[in-house]
Image 1 (tube, rainbow, N blue to C red):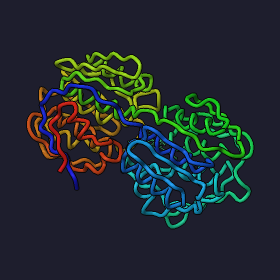
Image 2 (image 1 turned 180 degrees about the horizontal axis):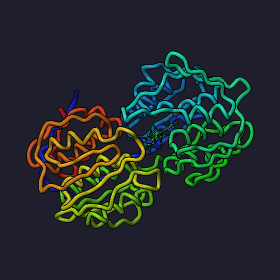
Image 3 (image 1 turned 30 degrees about the vertical axis):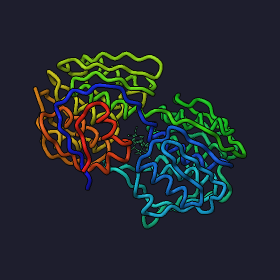
Image 4 (image 1 turned 120 degrees about the vertical axis):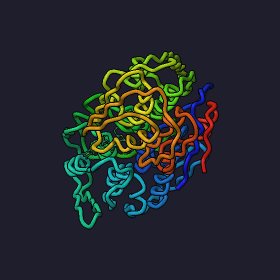
Length: 417
Ligand code: EPZ
């Protein structure tokens, strides 16, 4: 299992461009299944999750190639609608292909999705919504066998929780359905807006993306488009956490400040100075961090659950106590034991984590067990005095593109073994 060796305790400096968003690229790749012709996605990050999505597209017969951060996809030659278990198991995001395959093909067979273990990650909201859109879905022996014999039709839908994936699957299933679909309590994440912008460019008729209610008028067909993936707000939050933890001043380019409202507020409360104009964000950490107000992870525009681990790593060094409440996933504190090995003082009780700030962290060997936990451990290792080894880098590479080079370009001493 590959690992990072980090010689921490160094101040970072310099400027770095933030990669394209993993959680936008994945639904956009699924959306190409619905279009005729060759799509071009710019600013698409080179990640193992994106590679897994490209392999799924190729498996179904699409042409899908990535050249650095440009991806070309044509689904004109799509000829099958089943996704084998080994491909499904590679990432949680793979369930996003369900709605698009059903819409395009009228059927889909998928294994239950895999990905990081963040507690039970059901897809009940996805399935009940697709059934209301006309799908017949049978679950047996770990395989979802979905058909839409009469095609999909519009429906009035409401989500009990603004699930990002369920919202995306509903949009992808409804965009070429027969009639109008209204979705209330939809997720409002920027990645939803990016998906709807892509689809509307390709001829779809979608209103209300980014708000609680989305209306979709089904259209007959969609044509391929060129589209630039939005920047990854969680990678931006992670780099801000690294700068905060190491008392650094850095500049991030290619960010969209309005996607980072709750994150910027938290760092502001911690005493960091943040100035942004255009796509540039200047970040300056204080010599000693203050604790933020209680961090409650919430659906967008609340504080993003994916930034919880990186921010927690930075709060380990606050002068005072920080409190986190993880409201989105059941099991998202797996990085806490490993942060403790680096010298932090954190107590977890159910959804609440209490972080008592310490003067310094000390290098140690730690093991990542999921994507954002890996990012948090690297943030802490950058701040820790001495040498750390962070294993489980395969998790990190699901969502962070060339991260050791990014950190080294900011003056960190990190290398991969
Ligand atoms: C997306 O996951 C992101 N993944 C996650 O990022 C992110 O943490 C999450 O949204 C919340 O923002 C991708 O976009 C590929 P949800 P998703 O459906 O769609 C429960 C990362 O690190 N739920 O909003 O799976 C679910 O169990 C990843 O990049 C149901 O109960 O998130 C969870 O507790 C991690 N039934 C909560 O809702 C359902 O049918 C939020 O899930 C669907 C979800």
